[in-house]
Length: 100
Image 1 (tube, rainbow, N blue to C red):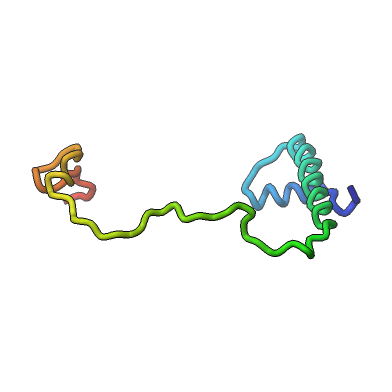
Image 2 (cartoon, helix red, strand yellow; image 1 turned 30 degrees about the vertical axis):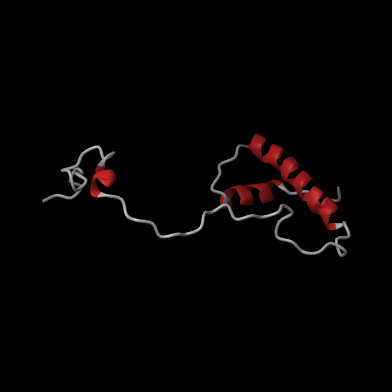
């Protein structure tokens, strides 16, 4: 790993600040090594020649799992309120959320 990928403690603190994280000095030291290692792996990946590989958004085959949007008959009022915790037979009854 080159020196360019070694993050300083200040770099780690700045990243933690952006993520709204409070880190102890031990955390900073541990994450300094871990984040530097991750950046080193990205540097290795950048060295790969991918010019012969077509751009793709996913390596997995994508299929639509949604059903067709088809109009169907509406539910009856009885079916709609059947599982309501409280109803007056035609409407849901809910607790008041506003004063007056």
